[in-house]
Figure 1 (cartoon, one colour):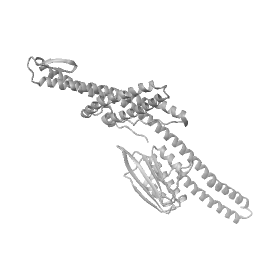
Figure 2 (cartoon, helix red, strand yellow):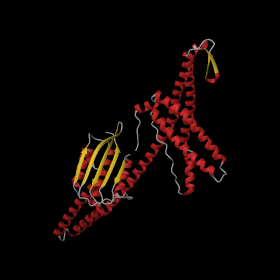
Figure 3 (cartoon, one colour):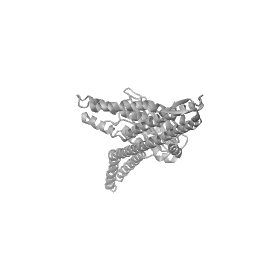
Length: 425
């Protein structure tokens, strides 16, 4: 499913919120827990390399380190996404593409070379360093404040960080140094915000582009499969229905032409028969073109088109359509054909005695409505998506329109078909 970025969202992504209180808390934790975590991972890597030839124990340690690094990178992306509202996709483990041990090794190498993982780990390392420096600056600030306001005589002195001895004569300058340390701590917070949003934001944009490419590829493949299934259906209907009837009309008219002089009454009867067959062929052609696109969608909208489908259905249909207005042609056509094919399957295959159709507009994403429809029957269930079948055609059409489909058809029924298609009202 595709997604769009509004100007407001782009502005917020370019200027993430300050959230200095949360940043202070995050850096405090990173300066303590983060540095300890880096030390433990470094020790594990050293131990793994040192024991690499000891019955393969080192390889197992390094494998555990890889999984730990991946989890740490996932945590870092989620942390920055929450802290600064960066629209980043979660880091996912790349699955194996081949079976067996070789496929597993290739999967490990693919994840080891994952750019987003290393970018997130680099950000984790920088955040831990910034957090440690910030804690030192805060500690120095506290010491300077204590010295500045502490009761000292001229002969007394106190030790501040870095082993410096300060006397009471120098105490007035300590407040200024405390302010400098506070400014350093705040500056580190802003630096963390800038670096983190730049690194994680860049990987988020790359991930978003990759997701858009994947979604576009899926939609293109769905459109191609839908066109192929539709072409096959048209060829089958023409070959099995309209074509033989038109051939019969031609043969009947040929017989009438031969007998028009010798037996005018018989010729007239044959012409009447050909006329009836012609009207039947026209009706079949209309039904065939209705299967390609229903003109009533353009003329009167989705509600009227679905009412016509429900009226032609061989089983009673409870139609519940509540839409505020019209939508773009692609989304309306996708929902229309999904419902029409769903009712056809319910009448032909599920042995249902009734069906219910519900259509609504849903706002799954801010500023982007979705057409949502559900077709449910009381049939025997057990519906499956087979190549070239009706459900396969529905899936291809919905995917080509950028939507999603869900089919729930347990053995014994009921069968429920849900589609959700993005649209522009």
